[in-house]
Image 1 (cartoon, rainbow, N blue to C red):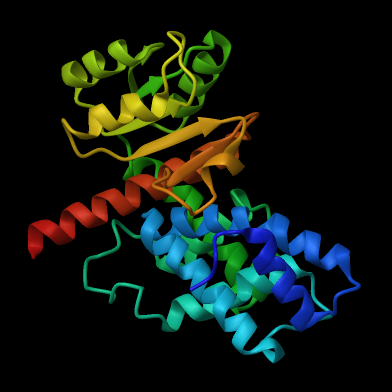
Image 2: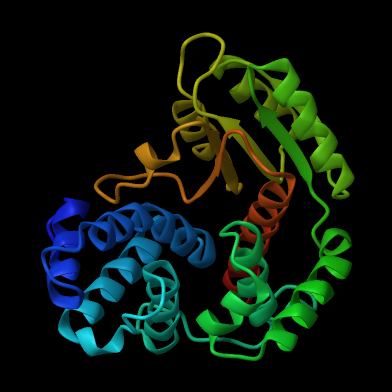
Length: 280
């Protein structure tokens, strides 16, 4: 088990893979760990499993430094090895018939997340997932053409900045979802959630009354089971892996593609979990 300090982990990787003198490599690895942690949480649908998969990836690299291609960017290697570890890990739930909602295969979901949220090109995504670039392009195109209708949901927005709230409303509506309400404070959020029973919540971290969106969501989740996507200007503060933290995070300022992909994945994971629990 690793100590929590990410720079210690990065320094260890640096020593094993490149040598103590390459501080650029050290810095890049350290910078990428929160981003890999964000991706892992989004992919797995939980902080616990996502963070454990990242730790397992780092353990694999330290135990087997020859696994890393030193001629490839550290970010690509981290994500490639993460997926290799994830594919064979006991952390990953066994695939079960009917687990994937609608017609969206797991390859398409991974490709969509890597190309939108993480910003990898189709060629880079193909390298990470060990498949052909043409297959990635086809998978992403197919996902985009069918996913909105498949995942239409009632959404509640917790955001105290009117311009951002309206921007989110337009984006969410353009995806085929229905915005049932926009609120600015902790109390309003809990009250609205009771009234509209949303299927998805988008929540800012800092609210108009000085309270925390995290606390508002905590109270909402005590009332209902609903996926939540947090929006913050400082995502790295919630990606330390050292305490209970949100699973789905979007950085401010945000890109429409990132909002869409994060909402899609959160809804898919939540609906899959509900379907599996119902059929258990």
